[in-house]
Image: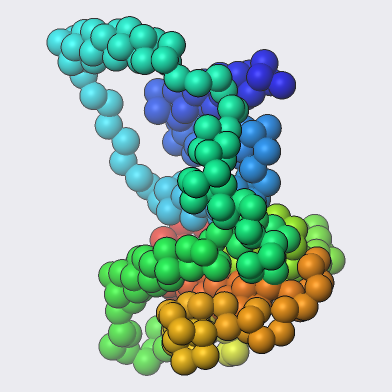
Length: 185
Length: 152
């Protein structure tokens, strides 16, 4: 199963590189879609179906928004000149980070080993043990999101509210004329 | 935006009820199976996007115009807040699961979980109304800048 996960991650990284480097806007948008779907597949392989569902539906919706906003709109694309110094600095920084992270990964526990759930006094272990009795919800994820940590969900709903409010305020303008295409929206 | 070909419209007509029911199912059974209010809300917003793309920008009609979507959005988040405040009154703390303490219900039942299915429905309405509103505003903005003149 780990090989499948690594394959999916390579696919996602490859799609991201395509999305950034390609010249065609359509290919770029498709590459972004592939990144999202690859991520959703990775979540499924990591046994997180709630996140996988949300990822795939948000990905589809985002693709529609992106296509609507960019393709056929006459978006100007420019090509940057090659910045050799910047590329060399980025590559060397990435190499240093890679070495440091390789050393750090040696000291991590094995992949998938439940460190926090194994300690009985940790909140994660308490939530897992008490989810069904205390909340009545069989889905532990929903029990945490909507009962143990419902205040964070309120914060998330407020963020979405504020974001959509911003979109509406920026894009909505009261039409001055009552003639013309359509009517008052 | 004028809608799309006959094939797309026929497929959309066949599928739209299922998508609506599926989104509602994800939200309503979120405390039993994977899903929840957010996934169901995005699915229903996607249904709104599908209707506008397939049938044209006037397809949702009078009842789903921008002002109504904004009102549904605000109503849904108010409902979530009301659930929280009722938790203060009857459960002792904000967003306490007071229904669960009064009516436990059997595990794996639809009516178990107390305030959780109600909060899931509030989140479902909020997310679907918000994203549908954002798309409706984008469509209207595109119409105003004349970008639709470039489409065939």
